[in-house]
Amino acid sequence: MESWKVETEDGGHLEGHSFRTPAELEPTTAGPPGVVLLHGTLV
Image 1 (cartoon, helix red, strand yellow):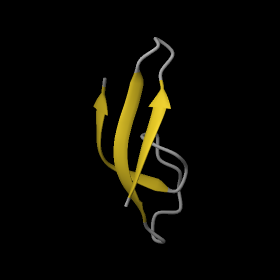
Image 2: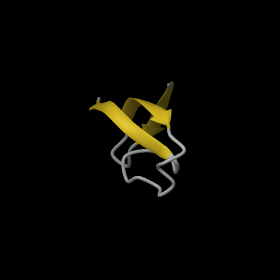
Image 3: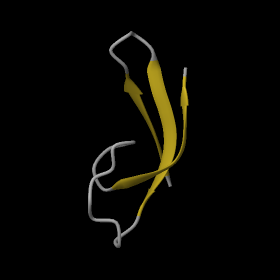
């Protein structure tokens, strides 16, 4: 499990917690490549 934060174009940020899984090799649209989003909060 890891936490991540990315800034959005409107100056806010998106935070989330994710975990890596060997079975999920395709990048997701909700986080960094190779990471499956568990939950995120747009602040």
